[in-house]
Image (cartoon, rainbow, N blue to C red; front, side):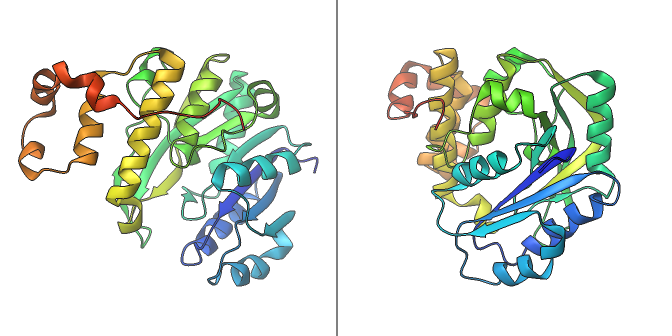
Amino acid sequence: MDHKVGIVIPSLNQGSYIEEALRSVIANQKHTDISLVVMDGGSKDQTLSMIKKYEAHISLWRSAPDGGQAAALNHGMRALGGCQYLMWLNADDVYEDEYAVKKMVDFAESSGCEVCYGLSHWIDEFGAIIGEYPVEPFERAALKDRCYISQPSVLFSRRAYERVGAFNEKLRMCLDYEYWIRLAEHYEFGMIREYIGATRMYAQTKTATMQRVHVKEAVGILRQYYGEVPMHWAVTKMLAEHPNRLLFKVPKRVLMVLLYPWKERILKDSGMGKKNA
């Protein structure tokens, strides 16, 4: 698949949204040489009918159990071996407009950056903008404190992917955050002040279980790559695991001071697997 850009859509039972994701990529194909791969984990909803509806625009698709999002991405990235640049779009996300991918490619080629990212909106289940992702200019050290890079607004070169390696298949929620940290060990990221992707926020993405998994993985990642975890992550972990309404009323900076003596106790049981799958 020798194309300028390869885009992977990993999916599992996102039939309510995947048509929008597919149409979003297809619109961008009008302006950029894009190879689209859809890796579905064996959906039981209307996902397959949506994929088949747009099959003419898809270079490769598969629907079978795959071991999770990271495994799906790794299969898709390998299939896109001839592409110069790589991106991925979750099945419930969209690109900002039909020029989003072209903007990223043009910026990558003019700047010479191997990894580029742009601005991003939060959207609700109906596609309405409800906020803005807190994107910041690239600073390697700041990644230890927060993930300020929005996944659907990222493009990286095939060369960078091959140097850094595959996505960590042991991660469920923070595979993008861990990947940015790995990429940042080798590259300076370029930031374009254009809206590129939009991340969908709805009830299923905000469950307590998902928040606990997210924080636990993030803490494990920080321990592995930095050897320490900032105190605000400890407070976030405690609040996710013990959602006490009274604690949520206390300013986080106050909790950071009050809970500091118990930091290691709060952070225990936050392990992570190997860097690469």
